[in-house]
Length: 101
Image: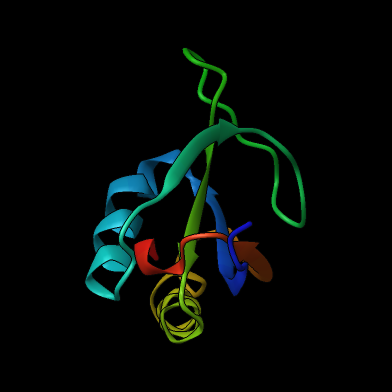
């Protein structure tokens, strides 16, 4: 059985129009891969939906080392949150192959 190693999963939920911008920034900060899902929901901000697709939000997940997680969260705090409605959270997850992240 392989040994598990703890890393961070950073999840970002934002307007679907920000996807490319967020991906470019996160890769520059050290992310090596991501998962993207269209989603919908409601929080402090009004629910906005695309009238054609029904999707307005994107959920991006990154499995990264803790330093990269902190860099991504710092970027979102300084560059995104003041201009756009977005959410970010991080949690510790265990992975079998930490060299991939």
